[in-house]
Length: 132
Image (cartoon, rainbow, N blue to C red; front, side):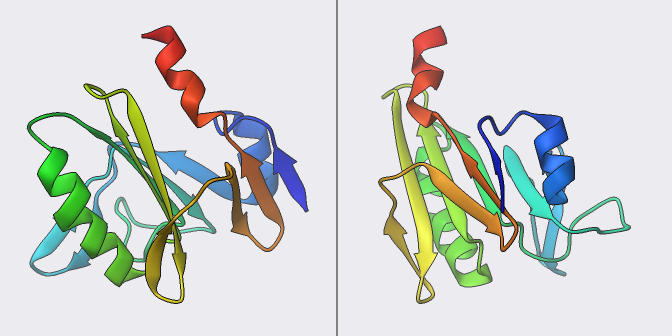
């Protein structure tokens, strides 16, 4: 299994056949399109948008988006089978991390994410507030 110490390490993602994207639409159905802050997709897709659930989604929440990110998107991502959902709140300087277990999100306490059978990454999520 390939482990990456930093999710931003492009080489590690290529070895795992996983890639991080921002500014990418995920078309869930004709009436539902989302553009997560950041997502990790494992495997290949050939369109300029995603039609299958990503493995990992990170949203940066603020006062304006907090309710939508914590409720609407949380429920949508859970229903669509997104394995990991990270929600960072810039005003509260908090991070919530959730893992899909038996089709429901549960809080995740460790920061190791198994993206695929061959690939896992460790993230130092809480260090993001040190630079702010």
